[in-house]
Image 1 (spheres, rainbow, N blue to C red):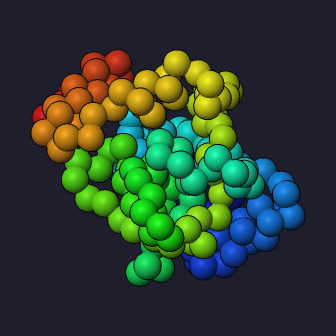
Image 2 (cartoon, rainbow, N blue to C red):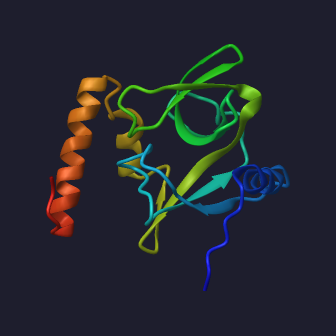
Image 3 (tube, helix red, strand yellow):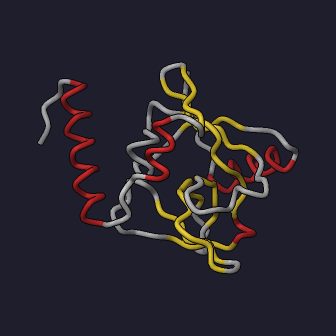
Length: 157
């Protein structure tokens, strides 16, 4: 079976329509920006409609940045109408968006046939214990990647 490539604008427009209709949507993950909690190539995420508590520090959301990119990142802080977001796997890069450009919240991660829920220890650890310091993040990500290489029994550089 061939691969169908859909432009992000079209794809996320459809996702937004489903979310506005009150539906949850499951999509595959691309990119490393939410490592180690969300892993590309193996994980799917569940996007769900926003509620009163969705736009709070620590939650993972689907947002469109001011330069038009769609990102699934964690909220670092909210100042008025501006939301600061950063991927767990990003050492220091942060993005901003308007509250109005947050479309959905991540409510589940699907990995190897199982769902990781927001109430799980793994999720709570990433939400509350993952370091915000660039140096500590770099160290933690390096350790995670080393363990990942050992688990896969591949040669690591």
